[in-house]
Amino acid sequence: MGPDFRKLDQLSRSIRVRAVEMSYQARTPHLASALSCIDILVALYAGEFLRVDPQTPQAQERDRVIFSKGHAAPALYATLAESGFFDQELLNSYNQNGAILAEQPSPGSVPGLELATGSLGHGLSVGLGMALAGRIQERFYRVYALLSDGECNEGSVWEAAMLAGAQKLGNLVAIVDFNKWQATGRSKEVMALEPLKAKWESFGWSAYEVDGHDLPALVDLLRNVPDGSGKPVAVVAHTVKGKGVTFMEDDNNWHYRIPTYEEVLLAQSELGVSHI
Amino acid sequence: MRNAFAREITRLAEAHPELVLLSGDTGNRLFDDFKAAYPSRFLNCGIAEANMISLSAGMAMSGLKPVTYAIAPFTTYRCLEQIRVDLCYYNLPVVIVAVGAGLSYAALGPTHHSCEDLAVLRAMPNLTLLCPADPLETGLALAAALTAPGPVYLRLGKKGEPAVHAAPFDFQIGVAQRLKAGKRVAILSTGTASHLALNAAESLSQHHLIDAEVVHFGTVKPLDTHCLEELNANFELLVSLEEHSTIGGLGSAVAEWLSSRGQHAPLLRLGTPDRFFSETGNRKYVFEQWELSPEAIALNIFQAFQAL
Image 1 (spheres, rainbow over the protein chains, first blue to last red):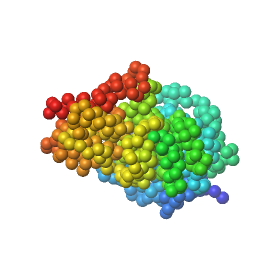
Image 2: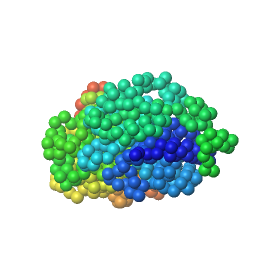
Image 3: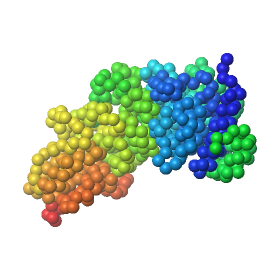
Image 4: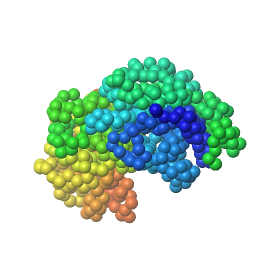
């Protein structure tokens, strides 16, 4: 058994279109950053291994997903809505004055949201604290922290990595959405990011590389936590910024650009879905 | 104060099973008793304050009550954004313990001085600032901090601080305490400067025939405005004294409050000046250089009083 990957593929398309539509309607940037990580979110939430229940989103034993790249929030919001944490109708009010869904997540705004992010370099550390708490309290949940590659510029990421490695926290997972771009440049050129997998290994992690758009491969990796190595698990997910919309793919202008109505129609047509 | 802290946290850990002690690679041997009694509830987080603060937030979100322990300038300025976003924004019950307030580590130079911490932290929403005066109050303040609903900054000296309080008392967050009754002049002090305030009052009495009141503000935020109301009504000169810059600390907080009153007593703000002490010297030496000896403080107050 296992998940029906045709359904997961359809879900990814639907969430991608949502992200495009939300960016258009709310006039918010970071669309390409959202598109690159959607398959990772779908693998997590629809891969049938994550111990979360929208009916009891605060259950102490739940697995935690920390969405550390808060600037890509529409991807998370749409995934949580599709997963049943809240009504999809709420997505239409995204970033409106007085609305619940802010451009970047705020604390406790919607069920399923584990952390208000937006400032990079916090998520892995907070997730590490949650994982340590689980160990102290003898609760066997897992913590998945989804980071951007640009986020790995932040020193705090490596502070967390070094401590997690020393503590051999097998219930902690860092997933890097390695889309090869940060706000204003190639991520491997701005900082010496590569070799990224070897970096995690040298910090005491069990590290893997995966095609971050290959849903079966992602599910295979992410469900296999702890992986038996006794170490925290790093997943370097090779992704394409703007994935799914051909004219946005690997074009870093879409870090900030907001689609026109015609571009929304094109994206809807390419992905075969529309919500508006 | 650090020994009192280590003793009290070990004692309080029994009543607080959710308490976890995190160290920024600080306090060698200091926590041996704690570690022996509660090995799973102690973690050396390494010399990585930003990560320590954020992970304490993750622990607090998971139902634990973390107490972080590190040297004041490192656990404040370096990780201010982590304090702001992960603790204050979420209003999480984490106690940030800072050892080496003000000039406690004077001889180590300005890298180890902490005379601006209250200034930057006072602006953080939800954060309570506690500055006990002596080892006894350190334990009382810690116990209070552990019951607070949100984040608390506990500002400690180092070691060997003289006793200010003769006996245990009912420490309450946000309530100032009169240490010595007096007339016409009131010294408002906080933290490690409160013992200095008593000595300065003694000098004022001996050399200048002024019987000053001394009020200790063990909490700098929230400020005890009821107490300020009374002091403002009953004294001709108010003096703030702190082991901290005259910019942004207790003196500034009092000035901000006074400025909202139509009529108020003049305020003399005493503390460290707006510059680094880059010579070599121990705490006593720096205090003398900066006119913060009891005699220099008394003279300063006397002159301000005469000028009224």
